[in-house]
Image: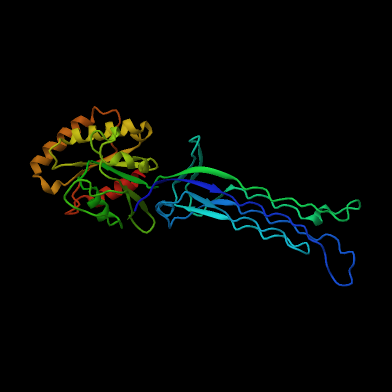
Length: 333
């Protein structure tokens, strides 16, 4: 299951209490105090791991807690420090304060570690209070409490290229053809229910990551369909690829304008990102139909305020122009 948002309360460990103890040994009549200090409570860290892809591990969890420090020991023994808690998240995870909504961390790089909550300090045993004036201290200090904070984790996938289009325009077929991703493919709308990532290999030194999200429909910005829920996953993408279906009853320019409008309502920043256009399913129409539709689209492009870097007709079934599309995307990146 793909989980991209969870809310948790995190707790660092409480410090261990100090103890009251007296040295009791044969032939040592004046042993004095030997109560040790408590151990420090465990800290809470965030750790980024690229082998994790969703926040599903936190499903159903409400609280996570580091280990408490152990109390002090006799013979001036220190209590053991509590084991720290490592909250392992995938790259692209944002950490928000659940109450204020403030962004605390944007965790992007694999292997990064951030200490979030510090464990409580251990309390002092009675040996720590011995002095020339107080040879038999009968006091100790309890350990300090740990810290607690309610947070919200949100995952935004990291990709170079994001596919944007209506349902059933061939996004899943394209990503399965040019990358190592293997999404479900069927001839009905909303085959893709969760975001998918794939790596496109150009040559030994060049590759890029491509993301497929559920199709966007008109009214997505008002909560219709599935696409809006996952649009946040393409906010990190450097380039957008609009996929327009040549066999669809909608004209190509109508598809484009509808998608651009929904994108603009969601994020002006995303709307202004560089983009290209792939005209899909050209094997499903005649050459004359294709030429007529493309000509109308090209006339519209001249009037657009933001123009595509390229417009390429493709067929994922026959493979036509797929290499050209890959090289164009790589050059744009």
